[in-house]
Image (cartoon, rainbow, N blue to C red; front, side):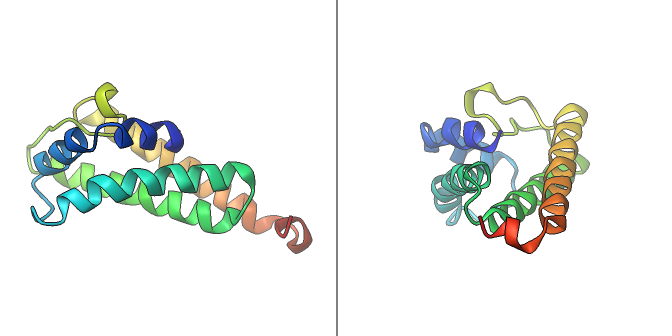
Amino acid sequence: MFIVAGALKIVNPIGFARDITDYDLAAGLIVPAIAVVLPWWEVAAGVLAIAGRWRIGALTALTGMSAAFLIVGAITFARGLSPECGCFGFMSERVGPMSLTFEAALLLACVLLLRKEFRRPEEDRRR
C-alpha cells in the first residue's frame, strides 16, 4: 500500500505539495521538502518491510506515518476543511469519514504487523 502511495506522489511532487498546502497546517517553506522526501520514505519503508530488511524499523516508520496521516486528517476535518487527501496522488479522495476510516484501518494493520514482529523469536528477526 505504502509503495504504491509513495510512487504515485513521487511522479507528481508539485501536485502533492499543493495537496499538503491545502491542509493549511505546514509552513510554506517546508512544504516542498515534505512533498519530495515523504513519498520516498513511504516507498523505502514499504520495500524494507516486505523484503524483511530492518523490518522492525520499517514497520515502526510505517506505523508512525500512518498515525501522523490519521491525526493530520482528523485535525483538518475537525477544522471544517476537506482537501484532497493526497494519499494516492491523482487517485486521492477528499478528507472525510471514508478517508479517516481507511487511515485508521491502515494504522491498525501496521500496529498488528509490528506487534507480530516483536513477538517473533529473536533468531527469526535477524534473518
